[in-house]
Amino acid sequence: MFWLLDTAKTAEHGEHAAKSAHHTPIIVELVNHYFGQPVYEFQIRYTKPKWDLFFAKFHTTPEAVFGPYTPETAIPWYTVMFIIACILTVTIIWILKGKLSTEEPGPGQQTLEVGVLAVRGMLADIVGPHGLKYFPIVMTFAVLILVSNLMGLFPLFMSPTAATSVTFALGLSSFLYYNYVGIAENGLFGHLKHLAGPIWWISWLIFPIEIISNLIRPFSLGIRLFGNIFADEQVQVTVANIYPPWTNWALPVLLMPLGVFVAFVQTFVFILLSQLYLSEVSHAPHEEHDEHAEVVEGHPSLDQDEALAVS
Image (cartoon, rainbow, N blue to C red; front, side, top):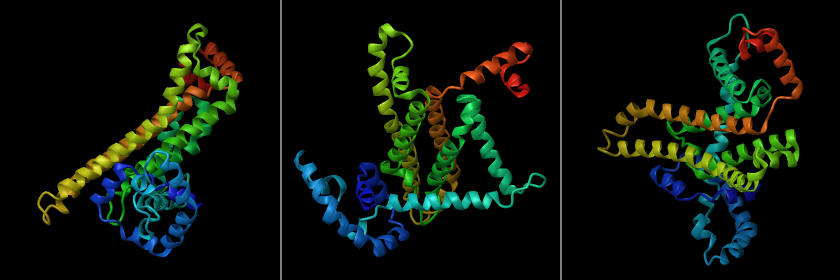
């Protein structure tokens, strides 16, 4: 478990800039105060020697790559903030859910239903009706990323998605999931065959291009999410420091709607791309296709969606 925390120290220039632009939240200092020393001792004893051997081959040190090893920074700020985001996600859903009612739904339940129906509609449109089975994973991505994006707008918090370590982890999770779905539904050979394209005589050219394109996807997802959230935070900080202390609160508050808009848009883009990747590897069962075809033939005046409703 501790080696995950050590690996999480691999924040690049973006995280260092983000941390320097903000004062470290007190909750991060408290977590490191109580738990940083044992984590630091574990890193020094077990993980740092391995990193020393690895980076010695490149004539550098883990300190030059990760930053100094200290008890005060043993647990990175983005690790603490992401754990808080997970807790907040569960708490917010529980609060909005409230007491479920079909006759008199409360405002929280209605708000939650709007998000649920929006994501379900996207899945049905992009992946197909059979794609609703992926709803739990996609909705988890949506709520978790949205909460993480919005955290930076509140005092005592920072957006964990303003760190590449978090956004790359999210991008890698999406990458692993849709490839798992592709292998589970089509088999390993069928999944790889899909990457070769439908035209056999140029498959030797398409296959390596598709492999490279797929390997780039987790990085593109991570960089896109990180870059926009980090840039939004930097704008807030720059504006706040124009003429302190007068601009410390007034101007950032005026820019808050823009931050909320960016948070929602980046959440939408992430889950949209994840669903597009799922649509490439997941296909409706043949029986379902046949049933829908019969329905459409039996109702020539109906479009496909209406025919599905009839079926």
